[in-house]
Amino acid sequence: MPLLQLDAVADEVTIRRAELADADAIATMHMASWRETYAGLMPDVVLTDPGLLPGRQRFWRSVLSDPRFAASVTVVAMREGAVVGVAMAGPPIDLDEQAAEWQLYVLYLLAAEQGRGIGRRLLELVVEPGRPAQLWVADPNPRAQSFYGAAGFVADGAVQVEFGVRAIRMVRR
Image (cartoon, rainbow, N blue to C red):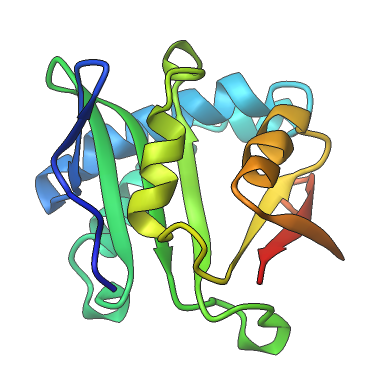
């Protein structure tokens, strides 16, 4: 999948392809974003689990080094040397429930960075505008659902629960 103009700069934020050296910083930002986004939606015991950060660090190290993820695309948004956002997409994970040929797995952006167009740019770099794709989004999460709706995604009725959070699938055909 060709990426749009990597190393994009938006509002003094640089967006570039993620590297293995970014894994721990991505995991830390990922957890901070989860705590901002999912407080009240996800059980507190999950968000405060001391094993959560080490688990996310192992996950991101694997994503950025394991050949199993070679077909996926991961980008990070950086401000002043710190990771403030991440997006990852690739072939659908669960082929039994495949609704599109490409899937957004992850898009997290710190709350302080939202509303500046950075999330849209992250999305466009891993899922080309207009490309058929699917994603799962927490429900309720009206801000995220509206964000994806503006990018052409619509709920298709599929629902799943992970980490105690109900999620709906959104698809762009």
